[in-house]
Image (cartoon, rainbow, N blue to C red; front, side, top):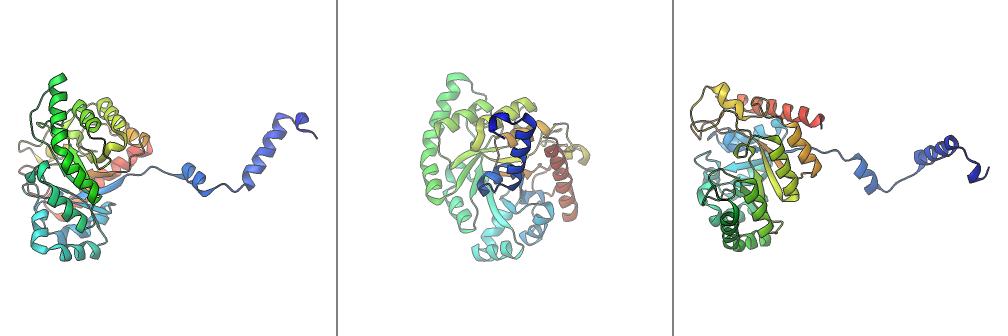
Length: 310
């Protein structure tokens, strides 16, 4: 039988037989078989000011490999590290098979994070996160000028991050210069280093999935950290616990399916932090360590259900 005499069905059968017996390069197969997953990190402040020795055993119970260390007023685990020292902190991390991911330390300010970068590096982490402060609610040329001025001032700190192999994550904290979607895009354009990115807090963005998802796609690989945190009923005034917990995915009204779809579209490789703020700051989100872990897991189950719909 010549090739020209093959019927469509016969040709299809030959192709199917060839595919069944062919050995493809592993790298090509990996592209087909790769499954997008979220890489979880636990914020130490979710447990208030509990000792690290109490928090670290909980991390893997939540499906996470990493811990993020928070400083006062949100937690005090950063201060605990000063008391423990580097070696004892390392021993605790190793004992519980947990990796340090990042520090979030707003109290130092983004222009005073170089020593934090060095400590994070010593402890095996790779990121520091801070907000920016500065003028807010700027638009147009005024915003562009202020962002460019901020970027120039930050350049030496980005240089240090590059030398250390650390990433600086800018949180889009409301009330800061880098808070709006436009300001986030502009600062990434002004500082193209892969050692600077956005640590996104959807709580501080309009609660519109099109806006959040569009920003995720625009940022692409410059999105280096995301908090699974929505506005709910806010976190600035004391509310009944059920209302306060509405900041968490699965309790609040935000639909996370489009957000996770955008993360999948950019093949997001950063970490995801299930998060909320209690009132007052510094207390655990629930009364017991076990309850905090269970609540994080409930939010994680919801996120995984949403991801399955993508």
